[in-house]
Length: 193
Image (cartoon, rainbow, N blue to C red):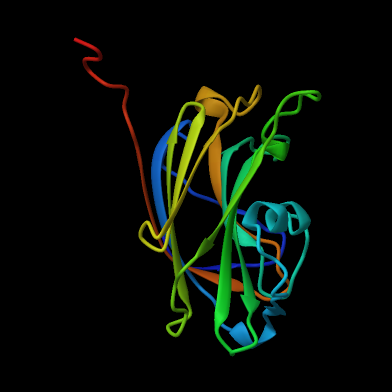
């Protein structure tokens, strides 16, 4: 898949894979960084910022990323996404978040948020994300591994063949999914032998 426009609120399915065991690598192209939200220097904790700026909190150019362990109708999904802010020095601050809150329809279960700042130069207006999805684990690597987050989720609907992966954009500006490659992973042939 290449040069796919990601319009606001219209997720695009990454097809040809089993969504519960997959390796998905994407590159996003951001057309207009000038519309990035200003970064508040008091925002020191990336996890707290992820809680404030969840995947459904709309900005101009963000949030955008991947929905892992997603059902077809998005009753369950685990968003791994980026937020981009403009710092006072005209550089950009990139935040990556992994949010377990929408990952399961059950209530009263632990659904943590994880976040990290990504040290990346956006002069080419591109940002990469790789997700390794293995049954209940989502390992996420931003900008070729500059920031990594591992999250464990326990969906009840998005399991086995019902698990999908989508690219999404909830910002008001269209983002381009410049490149996507994905393949299914298999279970190990031998384990602990």
